[in-house]
Length: 219
Ligand code: SAH
Image (cartoon, rainbow, N blue to C red; front, side, top):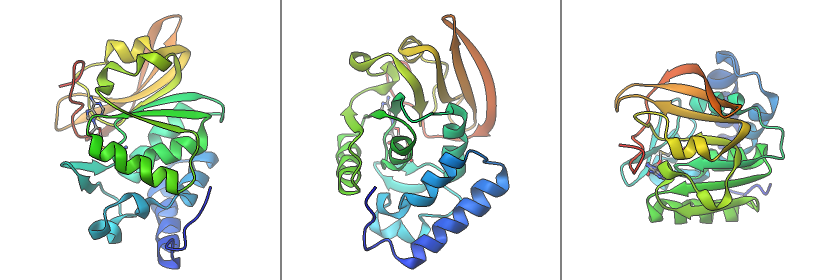
């Protein structure tokens, strides 16, 4: 991928520290995830006024009352998806587009869907500027998935659902994996859902706190 001149030494240093302290030190072992997050300029996805916080260990505002996800939670989610590089992936909740970029580095083709058109357009522009050609951005209610391109070998959901959305599970390929936060608005469990012979097999990865998934099969 293309690196911009504005990716200064300071951001490069902060990014290396993020990978060591927030990811490797907390048990992220997937080298492809670590490499992708070492490369992608996270600060480019954060509004100007919050750039100094881009590599910190917490969510940062991105507009429309939404936040860019914490680096550790992104790494944990994508490590669990165990992507080989060829997969077609659906991401629900594009937000800033940062996680979209990480998925794009790890998979073959990424469809991402966001309910706020302003966020979707902004993310699409940044991703294009950084040279990501394997990303398609859609606007709509991602709690219902994106049926026209299903099935997906992996799905990653970046907003919290009250329960496992049936539409998303239906759009998962057999042997596919989905990572999704499930639970009440203020505290959820990040779950890895595998589809095995049409049935969900669930493993809880971690406690987490995401913004709510708003829509037909969300809140
Ligand atoms: N991974 C993103 C997370 C953004 S926060 C990032 O790191 O930037 C979650 C996003 O999900 C928000 O942008 C919110 O608008 C979006 N969202 C919530 N409900 C949605 C739905 N039903 N369909 C699509 N996007 C949704």
